[in-house]
Length: 63
Ligand code: SF4
Figure 1 (cartoon, protein in one colour):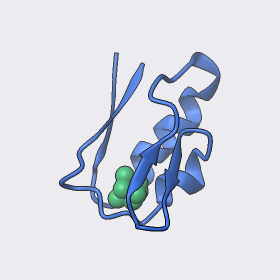
Figure 2 (cartoon, protein in one colour):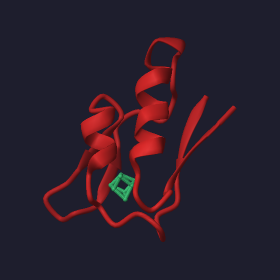
Figure 3 (cartoon, helix red, strand yellow):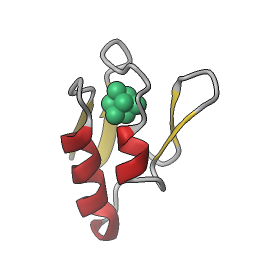
C-alpha cells in the first residue's frame, strides 16, 4: 500500500503524525512531510488510523 496526500486539503494539523509518527511529520512551517510513502503489513493499522484521524480527509491509502 502507498500513502497519497491531497496537498490542497491538508491544513497541517498533525493528527496523522500523532497516529503514525513513522510516516508523517509536520514541519515548523506547517507543511506535512511524508517520511515514508510505502506502508508495510506491520504498519498498516497505524496508517489506517492516520487516514481516519485526518479531519480534512486529505489522506488515502492506495494499493
Ligand atoms: S491530519 Fe490531515 S490535515 Fe492534518 S497534517 Fe495530516 S494530512 Fe494534513
